[in-house]
Image 1 (cartoon, rainbow, N blue to C red):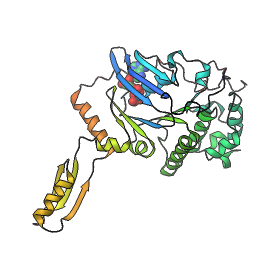
Image 2: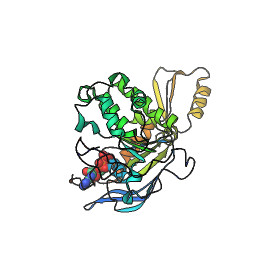
Image 3: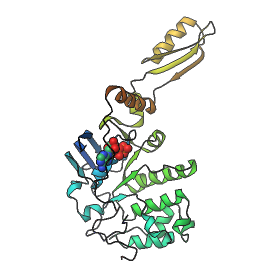
Image 4: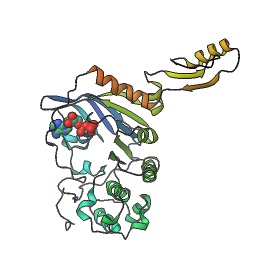
Length: 334
Ligand code: ADP
């Protein structure tokens, strides 16, 4: 895969320039059809500046397709899309310089030292981050002189992120960022993502099928199921929205364990309290969670619709380089 970037033709826009203005990502009635299979069936999305937004969905739901359309790597079948105010299908190098992709860009430079690699890639942007500061930001200062191919998987992923943000993107796409991470690396990575959004104002679109990750990181989550956004909101809102009701468990006065589902747990507890005229033994109230909502959506899709997965065709999307288009190839490009 070609990974060497070309110079951008215009400077990146300061993230604060349009704060509070138009959404960073807007999609309306986005549709994608592969052959005779409708994979996206009218996706509506709005992502605000500075948000960490998670697109959640089971495998095959259309997350990658959606993201690649937003990145400008795939041509949609229909619908309106604006990313940073521009239709990605007609975007130019200047636009490309404003978005960040996290790809395995080190692969073509595996024998390079980390600092060397960052310094090299920095030359492709008009206003790059300082490589030393970037190393610090992604927690790789101690690995600066280490060869990329001698890093751990988690450290390499940090290199990928470093390369994704070196040009100061306003919008960063993260596709399944922590797959294969151990818990500690995952936590560190989450801290990094939060820092980027909270202190640098980078808008982040994260795709994942890891509920815990979405819940931990995202300001808002959209659940993509069967080619449509079935729910969108903060993790708490989505949990509350669960069609699954709260579950109340207790031990009855005769010693038998009991449980009941209810949309009014406090009412039920009040009734029990009246009945027992005393403490309710082993009382537990479990509120519906994000996971309940998610599983409900996915289950509903599985039972409501026939399986419409198309064949695993070849990738007809544009070549992904992760950097502004028009790149030269090879390590020697400068
Ligand atoms: P996700 O990222 O949520 O796992 P994808 O967007 O990768 O989902 O895929 C959604 C569906 O579209 C899958 O059924 C997949 O097989 C199909 N698909 C993806 N890319 C292509 C393609 N280039 N040609 C044909 N079908 C595709």
